[in-house]
Length: 137
Image: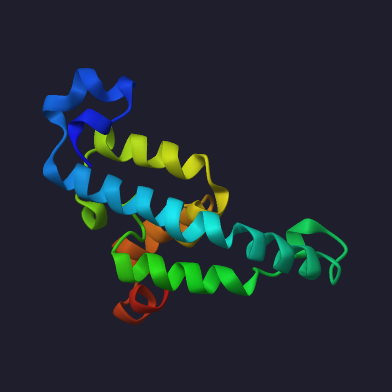
């Protein structure tokens, strides 16, 4: 993604955006547009079926397609972007990516960037054993 395609709100900060930002922005945008959005009908259908098995939405298991989306996000290197040490992005650079994720709840979940998981992941990243980090991060 070139600086010509960044949101207008970022134009005043254009000089502070690193090549890493453009790389990650492009990967996340591509993931949402070409992987998550086409998977939304499957996600919604699986979730609707799973909802029939529970008495409250908070008890609903995750749709199976979410596991596949997570594997794809991990393969693309766009998991846990809220962790500065993982993403190698400044807060300024992560903010517009978080905004993209905020517009697509499923992408947020697939990239492991949804609350309350983010707080839990921060604890695991800093204090977890290598085994816990491998499993959950």
